[in-house]
Amino acid sequence: MPSRGQLRIFLGYASGVGKTYAMLQAAHQRLREGRDVVTGYVETHGRPDTARLLEGLERAPLLQVQVQDVKLDQLHLDWLLERKPQLVLIDEMAHCNAPGLRHPKRAQDVEELLVAGIDVYTTLNVQHIESLNDSVETITGVRVRDTLPDAALAEADEISLVDLPPEELLQRIGSPHESFFRPGNLTALREMALRTAATQVEAEMLQYMEQRAISGPWPASERLLVCVGPSPLSEKLVRAARRLATALNAQWYAVSVDLVSSPLDEEGQERLQKHLRLAENLQARTVTLRG
Image (tube, rainbow, N blue to C red; front, side, top):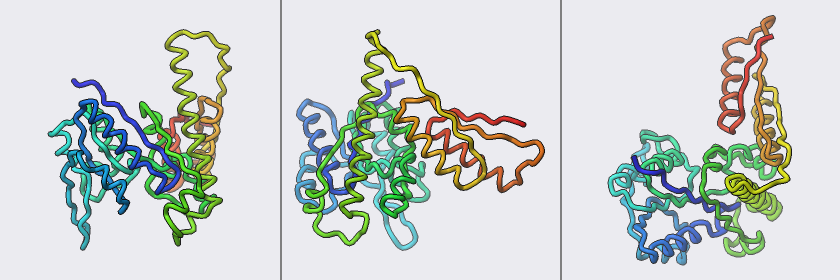
């Protein structure tokens, strides 16, 4: 069985900061080092400088999927597994695949490639991270539908922050009509990206110190408990708890109480299970108590 591939995520806070450009630059460096590199799915967004970086890189054929009256280009996972390069480039890890493909999420395609021993470079905007979903909606007024579980981010072997001041981003993209690109929104999203990258670096540092038995002082481990029920507010509470647990580097638990005296109806049970599944996806330990 091949050893697991390495995952490198190029993280940004908005479209246009240069994630794809940075990924392609890194790919050319690997090519010069003698690595076998293939572009699986890359979006140039009409930017000539980015398109030029595709030159000299082998491109995988795209899979065309008919959805109603539209043909969509999708990642050709089976071709890549058959070709088996050393490194594959895949844009937009949080993307939802077209109906009928083997996996509903592109992140699952990435996981299958990693299991097959293929390294993957991919891009991600911070607003697509599941635990930040509510915060992003509060800040921007936009509900992001394509989300990536935090566990997938935590499994990355390397996160490369691609940063650009909001003023320079707005100059680069002109005057967009979307309210999403307001300077205040971009500043808040940029801070989220910086915090996410910093948290990852801190986790890597602690792992390095533990592996090499470097003496502390080690901080006492915090623990966090969140009570989950069928209320729609539980979903926001779970995400808020995940953010706090990450900031505290804390183990956290999502607990529900099965009340013997007033059991939930079928609809309430479905909502409760949905909230507990979300907590598990965000790396909580879930517990159900009877009382």
